Amino acid sequence: MEFLNLILTSLLSAAALFIIAKIMGHKQMAQLDFFDYINGITIGSIAAELATELEAPWKPLVAMAVYGGLSILLSKITHKLPRSRKFINGSPGILLCDGKLYRQNMKKAKLDLSEFMVMCREQGYFDLRDIRAAFFEYNGKLTILPQSAKRPATPADLKLVPSLDTLCTEIIMDGRIMDENLHRMGLDATWLKQELKARGYGDAKAIYLGLCDEQRQLILFPNA
Image: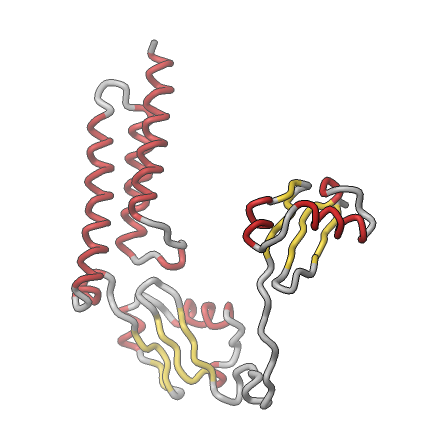
């Protein structure tokens, strides 16, 4: 009986964590601010406790709901009241500008020079003279504005007008035809089979990944 209860509380924990995560919305780790990061860890810890709580599983469940609701509430506040973002999320700080390092902003960001140099090298800047400005964002990322002479050339710099990039859609994945994607492009399985036959493939099972661009050109990756 205890083993069955453990299974049920574990399933309840997974379901609650999934629902709260869906309600809170998706964010990449690099986009999380400090509170979201700590809140995520806390909710995960409570979910682990819920999975093994057999006597009163409602207690950690309520705690998860409170933390999830608090995160949603703060998100709503920062959306409705932009001025509150500086207090809740923090604000970006200039660490380097026109050859000058800002010591006080380094201290506020809790960064030392070694960490700053590492973050610059991670973005490909080994010489600080190549950087015009560096900003430490509230999510912990370093944003760099390179010197004009050091940034990559763009088509506009070369006075070129490149053609528009085309989007590719997956129509075969692991040997299976993606009928919904085909229909969305105005194509069908009959057309695809004819194209595969013209390329020397008997059916879609021979293809690991198949893409189709907006000009209906197939890009095929057969099974190795």
